[in-house]
Length: 157
Length: 265
Image 1 (tube, rainbow over the protein chains, first blue to last red):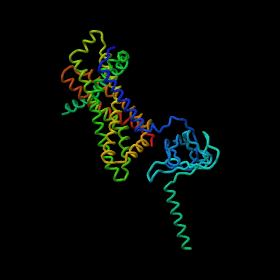
Image 2 (image 1 turned 180 degrees about the vertical axis):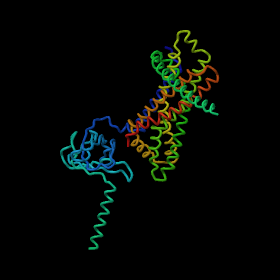
Image 3 (image 1 turned 45 degrees about the vertical axis):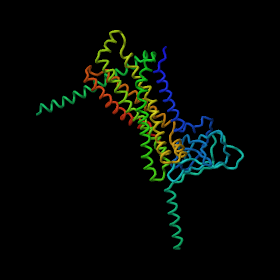
């Protein structure tokens, strides 16, 4: 088959198109942070997950160490089961504390892992025992008002 | 007076029935193109030739408009976001709006008016000058030889054009906000990478462009093939291509967006 300059231009066009897709995937998207490396799953029961969503980051000391994979409701204990996939490079002790935090005032919610001091590490499929629910603004305000009211009652007596 | 009303109602009915008829013909033509594209996929140099005309030559308009759209998005986004002190989120705004919506839609609109109209005019003129009839006389199937290569060339070029549009647009936004205005470069890229998901944003955008590519080129080749073989008929068909495919792009975009981002955060 004869080679023409048209073929060259079309080749360049397709290369540029694939290049643009790669730029979008790696530089713009989070493909770079999607570790293709192995990960293991951890679970945690939370009393209230607030606005946590699947794909939310799991951070420890501010570093993203994994992502939330799945959130389900446990109809026996009436709390939420959150499944997280954690990068295998990072191991956490058995008594790690998981809490749902908010980045900034209006930011997204994420799970923060605070490592404990246990010698035994968490394995895949393990459940994090110590969890801390998300802060719900209404509950906080309610508690604050309740405290205020009881304080002023105390003053009167 | 009643006669006029009767005529009016009859006219409406006539147009409705005519358009349903045309829709059926278009669907049959589309299926025929798909069935006969096996021959043209085997003669791939035909498709390469058409990719040159529809894709490579549309590159300049796509790249230039992408750059300007990105720059305007950067400017406008910065103006609004700096009121709330979150100007570092401008990267997220530019990237998400380009990758999800503006990249596929604006690139497809440009593609429809740049390449779709050319395809219609070319095929319509081939029909008007009886080149298609001559091909049939020589036992060359015009759908396999003329229509299918143009269709596949459009379908192949469209995702690449839209990806380039988005990439260049994000570069334009970067140019205006980081280089000219002075938004922090690190937070520009890192916030963007945190917000743009590969599966949900980029892959969905690519799916959209593939659908738009099929819609635009299918409309363009059908209008060309169906055009009345006169100068007036070809010009009308070209206009209809641009109008119908623009409407199809916007309508399909709504449907696809509703499907893709319904269950999402």
